[in-house]
Image (cartoon, rainbow, N blue to C red):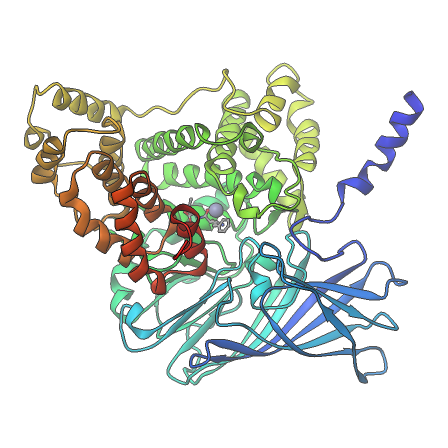
Length: 614
Ligand code: BES
Ligand code: ZN
């Protein structure tokens, strides 16, 4: 028994590096070391066309097949080049499409080629690209294209090993209409000539989900020597003003976790159909315009995406079951940056809101999905792991460690962790082993193995965790209580100094359902219906719908048509879907909104409303 166990332990590193179930690739045999893209951006056909050169590093030189991930790509020709410099045509086989994982591309070869060249075109329906007509942009004159590769959509615009366990450097040559600018998650030059011909180099090895491209009528405004913002001309001034604190955030992060290693840090403001809040594409964070609300109250999004420059982009989850290593660490660091730059009250308010969201999520999630270290996502769409659990429970776990070990010790630990695993892809087990030797071992009674286990491998939030608290929210709580008991009228509540977070908390503290007349009173006092602030709208409209406050419906419809950010609009679709009449209304709205939504958002809405005609 003993012998068998130690044999197993000896062999366990082999199992630990089992291939990522979200990818067809076989990185234990061969890995992409460098990618060379040469692409034409065709807005009429809504396609990228050109070639990808994959420079390979063969771990198993006897292996004779290169397996890649693709989705809806038209593969035209595959060539291989070895030491003699001659390109030879290679046979390939493209498997039938799997709705979650796409088509496995197998390239057979007689020898381990150094470079494989694939000529291909994307589909207009590529899940990782959104092609916008001019009407869907702020300027209304030029089309726009952007990519969103995380989690497994890079394969819909580049044939590659679409797994975060493989890192590669890349270069790109991108041709666009001459009036447009192309930007990538690479060395964008703010002063590049606007001529439709752009070259990029990303000298640091990144995983496929960080591959990014955007094309549009974009202008640049500097925020500091190394930071700046790109946006459509009409958005640029507001964006630059909203994001003024970016350089301070970078310096704060550096003082905590070591140098920013990526050169420039720029932000790109996308059209409102961008399906996420932000995306940490290296050197060029993609951001939703919905955080530009005028008072900088939502710039924790910048703190978040910037934090990924350490947690995620430097130290990466090897597969999506361990996404908390990316998002939980990032949410923790985000909150530390918010605290340092905007003060502890702001950080506490944001924590209370996040933990409330997590509790809501936990109420509907299966036990198995409530763990930080999830079981392998074999056969499952990795987007299913995209809940508040990796984000908020992950950050909560790290706050727990910080409280137990003290800030100074924990900060030192995290800094060492980012250095130790820089440019590597790791699992929860790797983290745990590092935690044991570098934090727990020297102080075994500060946190027990059972407590760590509770966080990583048990559902829910451990009983011994302490919840976030906000003194500023206490005032909101008492206002809500008095208004509900009709001690005061809505317009008597002192809201003069409230920021987005207080408004959000106010709405979340209301009962799930109220008489419509009472919502009308709130609307008369505060004008929630039609609010330009998406964080308020995403909470108000579901309450309005549950309460039968149908006066909100027209504004609700225009909100759903204007914005494609999933997190903001899904709660309203879900609330509408709960009644027959609401669902019919939602289906009518969706029918007109659909053409403007990103494929990812279309998928989410269809999951709630059903596909049209069904
Ligand atoms: N990397 C994520 C976005 C993501 C995760 C896209 C998984 C696809 C799959 C990004 O850093 C993120 O977390 N964005 C948040 C904003 C943040 C402030 C919590 C979002 O989009 O809401
Ligand atoms: Zn994130």
